[in-house]
Amino acid sequence: MKPEQPRTRAADEARRGRSPTAGDRPCRVSFARGQRIYSGAGRGSAWRVLSGSIRLDREEPTGEQSFSGLAVRGDIIGAETLLFERYSFSATALADCVLVPWPETRSAAAGESLLRTFAKAERRAAEVIALRCGQAAERVRRLVLMLAQAPEDEGAAPGELQVVLPSRQDMAEITALTLETVSRMVSQLRQAGMLAPQRLGSHFSQRRFSVRAPAD
Amino acid sequence: MKPEQPRTRAADEARRGRSPTAGDRPCRVSFARGQRIYSGAGRGSAWRVLSGSIRLDREEPTGEQSFSGLAVRGDIIGAETLLFERYSFSATALADCVLVPWPETRSAAAGESLLRTFAKAERRAAEVIALRCGQAAERVRRLVLMLAQAPEDEGAAPGELQVVLPSRQDMAEITALTLETVSRMVSQLRQAGMLAPQRLGSHFSQRRFSVRAPAD
DNA sequence: CGCATTTTTGATACACGTCAATCTCCGTGG
DNA sequence: CCACGGAGATTGACGTGTATCAAAAATGCG
Image (cartoon, rainbow over the protein chains, first blue to last red):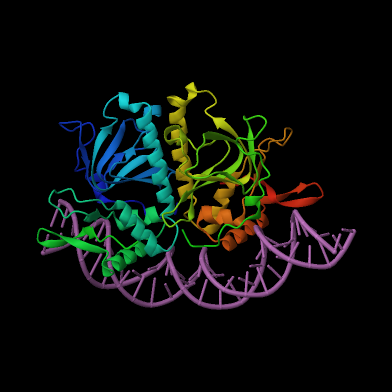
């Protein structure tokens, strides 16, 4: 939708992560923020998201890519390859993320596990739909909460949540707002104390935030 | 979303259609526009939509129902009951519709058929997400096209499309607009010649329209 | 250090939301 | 048969939240 700015993003080309087929251990695969994970109509298998967040897109009849789904830790992406052998969406990392092939064992592919995946995907789709109604501030707040995860480093405060925010452009396409509005709302959330930039080495990171759980 | 008008609708109570368990032949079941087909957390089986259109809702943590999916002819609803035995959404008829239990045979439940259903549901979810971005006129136009079907009566002009529009309130919740805006856009589509009310008996119906396929 | 990209911030315009009045449809009962 | 009433739909006037355009600031990378 929206004939907006082309997604010219340096990181799209700079493939710093390992490709699915290249790693020394094919088990865990990492992708950098902004990196394409797979393309629609390409061949490959399904994956489980161990950490990070991913956007799914479909090719419009007009040729553009349009946002059509979100995956966070624990979600399965590309399950349609069990049927078609080809992906029906393309996937791009919203933040650095780690994947493992799915299903882990061949037998797990059939029956209940698959259904569970199906049910989870439907619930996720409902959440994404809900991300696109209500006022801008609410929408961005809900997106942040969807992306927030418990920190990975052991020894972190229990119950603490962290989030690595996607680019404003990505957040805009997900929430059906503009990048400027999203930027304003993020600033607003920081002023309200919901988001606090985290110290990373010597300076504060503008991407990784700690999330103060809201009254809701 | 939106603490808007409660869905007080006369037709909700007037259950003119046959209930799933009551019909003389349990095979085909009809529901009238506005009628609840099943409730979230209720028990039941999955269904295939033979005609008409259906909205799916989930119960918000706050207690309200919020739109979370759309089903039209050919779609499967309630497939999650194969796993949980209970529905995870509730379903309401947007226009008079006819359902049959699914899967027709027990063996069809496993394997490929299920996957195909899964894949179709994902594509449908992507379409619904797309319904919520762009300008109001475009959104309503796309919704109409999603709901449009070839007429059922034999002898109809080939390639002709018809649609029975849902209530403006339903259309508003689906597209994340207000009912007033939807009403204006429908009027606009009629003036533009895309929608033409159909003669039904002696007067023109304000619900059933013939759809002139757009240049698109 | 310097350039390209992304993000932030501001000023302005407009599409849509909101509020309210009227109209159409339908069912109901006198 | 027509008067009545309620629910949904339409239309209008007005306000506002967000898009749009533009420029500056911050960030990242060679």
